[in-house]
Amino acid sequence: MTTKCDYCGKEVYLPFVCKYCGGKFCAEHRLPESHNCPGLKKAKPPPGKRELLKVESKPKTGFSLFLKPISSLYSSFRGYNFSHSLLVLLTLILMEFVNLKTSMANEMIFAIFLPILIILVYIFIPEYFSRKINAELHFEVSALGLVFSILTSILPIKIIYFGDFIEGSTLFLSITGSIYFVQVFSLEMLYLVLAYLGKISVVAEYLSIISLYLAIFTLIPFWNSSGSKILRWNKWAYAVLVLTLILFFIGSNFIPSF
Image (cartoon, rainbow, N blue to C red; front, top):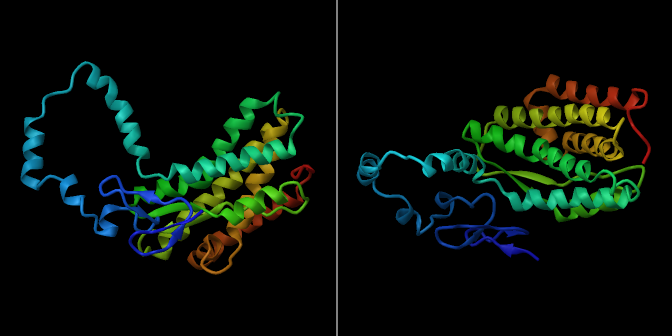
């Protein structure tokens, strides 16, 4: 079931709800500044009053000091679209249950922890780096991609595609290309880690293949995709990623059969 963005009318599967006005918006217009939020002025005090509040605030002691690290951690993750990440996590766990029925009970820790690790690399690394340079990248799931990922997970040829990153504002190609390069490179390195853990865990062995297929489908340079932006940004960087994937495929014992 889709919902239309209150600002532009775009249909989205999981809209962002503005905490100031209560409206529902797409990733591009989720920020109060992007949809001319009527509650934005109420949320931000005038500059003079803001400075006065800083002067009048009392030093934090006791329990407040204990909560400060927790609030800092919350602030670091505020703005991430956890609902979309949760959908991907549930899809990965479902794919594990479909393909690894006999091993799931014995490897429950791996079955839950390793999919979270994939999400950190696949979704949160690009969003983290984009925030470090004040860019706007937000992951949005593809319902069709999730369905294909589940259906083809039991086949020799897999289509592992969970969604795309939506750019909230116009970004330079050098920024998006470099961020997507880090994403694919991180997926390839994660593949090596999971392949090594595959010696002791069937779940890790299976998820190593999933991470590799994620890197492959992210690199495919179709129109305006992550792969096409890496290619247009730096052809040598794109060639390095492709060559690494080829070496993984032709390497002995790198691709277990599932």
